[in-house]
Length: 118
Image 1 (cartoon, helix red, strand yellow):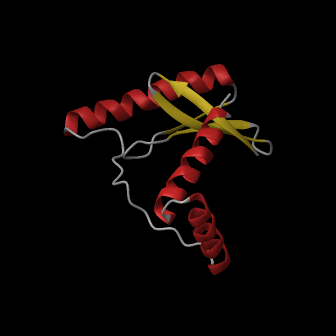
Image 2 (cartoon, rainbow, N blue to C red; image 1 turned 60 degrees about the vertical axis):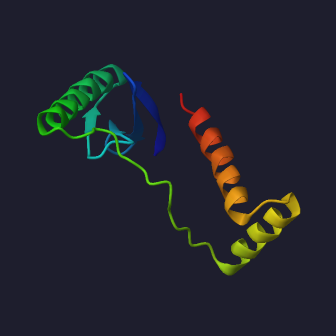
Image 3 (cartoon, rainbow, N blue to C red; image 1 turned 135 degrees about the vertical axis):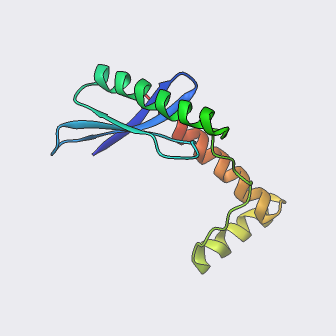
């Protein structure tokens, strides 16, 4: 299965293609609820994505809900002792706290992953 991204308006969806089903699936990310869509080709996927997103945004507007997921800026990571130690040593060598080092590493990894969008 391969994955990629599809931007519709200012919203991004993760798309995947399932060889066995011969079908494309899209799911919007960063929303406070689920909005997914399916089609057999990219043109159809764009069309179905617009419809799905429109219905989702309409439902949010009717309920007075922010359609975007809100993030607190805090999350807990569990990583094994060896990884924790290695990260702590890397942070120390870099002259920053483990938190700062981790945030910078996550920023780099996220930017790299998102830049690979088609």
